[in-house]
Amino acid sequence: MTENLLDDSLKTPLIQRYGINNYSHFAQLFIWVGIFAGCFFLAQMASGVIILLHYKSANIKQIASNPADLNALRYAQMLATLFSFLLPALIFSKLKDSPVTRYSNANIGFHPAFLLLIPLLLISFYPIINLSFFANKVMFWNDWFKDYQGDYKNIVEGLLKDNSIFVFLLNFLTVALLPAICEEWIFRGTLQKLLSESLNIHVAVFLAAFFFSLIHFEFSGFLPRVILGMFLGYLFYYSGSLWTSIFAHAVNNGSQVVFMYLNNKGIYKMDVDNPVMPKAWELIVYTAAFAGLCYIFYHFAQKRKNSTFA
Image (cartoon, rainbow, N blue to C red):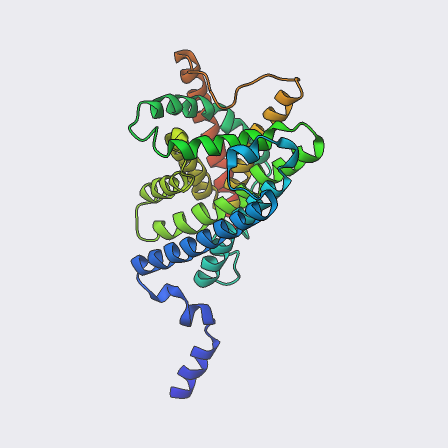
């Protein structure tokens, strides 16, 4: 009998015998924070070294003032995104499950209808996000880290100012695709999922969105980013697929890159940094449309879940 027990234990995957699932949820959260903080710190240091070596300066305003020489900044940002967010997400996912894609539901695709539904959901949701932007202006945190926020704005404006197609593609990769994959994997795919194991799902979605917004250190857009993060969190929860929130994140960021490119080319003028206060009728109509689209999304999400786990 002892031999049988030994044989059974040897058949148990190492991740179950020695992984972090044997620890309390609080301990697992502490491990998540440690992994994330360590990777984030090292990534920022490495990114800073690249910037210093290339530009011989750490003055972001000065660096961003020359749009023709910002590719090193783009590559540094790509490296920081990969090692700050994707690396800790992969490490934690591996500690929780094997293969590495399974814990975060990154091994599950999404319904083809989402390719149309998600952009429509975002469009109908933007008036609410725009309203939260004005609500954020009266909040006490709006001016926190004001100097840093100015540097952040200079970086974004500098990166998006060029109108060549090559730079546009680099910007799309830097600002849209990589952040969508890396940030969703760490905040929705690991943090939200970990929190939901011991907390109410709505609390888990909010806390993950709160930390998602906080880690950007850009408080003039703190509340809109929390609301956007909750939107992404519910997409992930109800669809059961990380790629759903990744796609939505990429569409949201990518649309800003596209609009800035069109603005630079003089094709379409739009101030993406200063949204217009939505009118009452817009809020009513768009919110009604959003509710209807959410119902359709939920229908397709459940259909996809049933076919995936049948």
